[in-house]
Image (cartoon, rainbow, N blue to C red; front, top):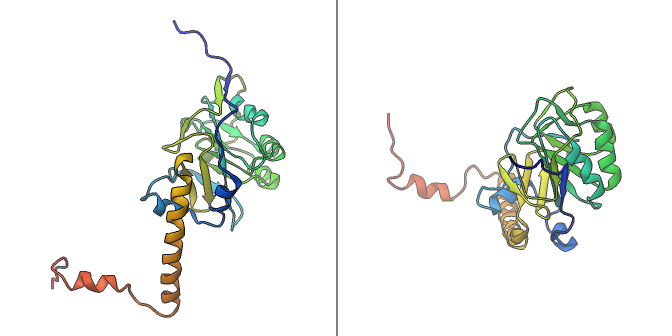
Length: 229
């Protein structure tokens, strides 16, 4: 038989993105970040925002894993997180009990977290919104969790179908949540800058009355289009 795991396994030290790297992503829509990663990196669409209109955040991931029906790992984040962190708590998408409500959300905010992302469920929606902590979650239920563990803080997890490690960069808005691996932050930032420049040019053309992009003319002028009656 295997020994029982510890109640919490905690990793405190991991590489974090620099302030300059974080600032490079401020104001970047999640859609453009995904485009810069060849259409990858977004958490599953079932993870919905509980945020005010216009909310857009970027920050380092602090990961946690909470076993089904338990939230000791999320509480453990209170002792590890640094101001500006985005807590990413995976639950294997267990949604029969809430991972958090308004009180723990308020404590996370007080400890410096700027957002919570989870594939689990939450409760106390009115209180969570009043607490001022933006949350992306997998559902809502009034059912309460236990606090017995086991769980982990700071170790790699999979949330919404995407691997996440502490120190990865999280970009989140009302469209969803995107994970930029720590090793790719600079590369993706450069690619997003090019995408934003190209989209700004197209946006100006649309506002000026453009009906369709010029490259579409080349498609209709080839045998790639078959006209039928």
